[in-house]
Image (cartoon, rainbow, N blue to C red):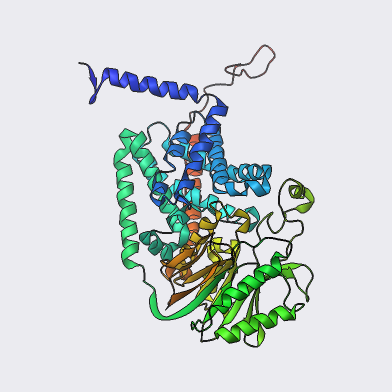
Length: 542
């Protein structure tokens, strides 16, 4: 029988026919865009609630395969854009009840950031890439992805929610790597593995460099595992989380406070060092409501611990609404306060309200912009314990927790509320971020919420105790180990993102030099261009 390599001729013809059918079906721009959106949405399965962490290492393969098969660079850019739209929409699908059609607008705008990435995929992996192209793809494509994550990490574009590396929050090896290069390093490695797998399954002739890339990635990961420092645990504190649960009604602010007070009184005699309430746990300015301040101070005296509350109200000493972490001790308000600096777009303020204010009429966008704090704060809560508070969405920003650890915080504390998204994937996604922040900084982190999910993590990012789910209205005490020392990530910062920018800059310079060299080597025309009857240069193909 006639053969081609090790495959019978009829099998090769059948494979070629199948590919032709697929290519013909994808010839429609609308079909291809729909497929791009679907393939781009696949990585969301690696995040909570599904939490299929292992799927992250192959989730980009269909998207890469689609972009590399694009007939033109322009089509590859559309494949990148469509995949980015699908990824952003899937990652933020729980916003649909609040923002409605505006969720699609946001996903489309952010998805455009992946258009250049789609072109890079085609540039390196189209047809049958050489060994050099595969090696370049293993560096440049992850660098391109990191650049997208870096750009969208800007708070005005929504912040770094859904960074690919954060899907590895429950994997011990990944948490160790996060202490070296933060979530950025994890994203780089996850994309590199996806590129290698995509080459392995779709380009038979280029499998050896793809295997070499996987081996190099495994070697680098193993080296980081061996040489990265472990947190030096040298103490323990007892921190209580108070989660009141869902409280509805016209006087929900008073009823929530009553429930928090009731739960906190259960901590009397439990020898706690700090009590943490969730975001917006107090709906009134404590200066204007001294009765509430006195009640919290009484709780502090009874339990022997300071209470960190979160006030969501107009301040008496400044105009506007602030969300502030306020520490209350046995004698009342201590004066330690942190006002949230990075606000949730549309949830807490509307960007360019004069242009986008219509969002308030189609969804639950903020009717009035909240005010921003100006600096991060480390609070001394007694017993020699220093804590660094963050509020809600700020836990998505790795630089904020890094700065708090560098400023001397022993424990990172996040006060959050995802009540609006109670029965979605949002609470689990949010709670998982604290594991990365703990591992990056080598500091334990407490994630306290109003309605769940509340969670506590040790200095290596390991989970302590059980999560308090969205159906819980309770208090819980956690024995939190303390660790000191400085992780490589705290010391060197976002170096993987900076390295990615250098890799892209070097590639762009090399491409520019190559283009100039080709132009210089191009043969000179043998004579003047042909002239038409109208005495203008002839144009081939016209």
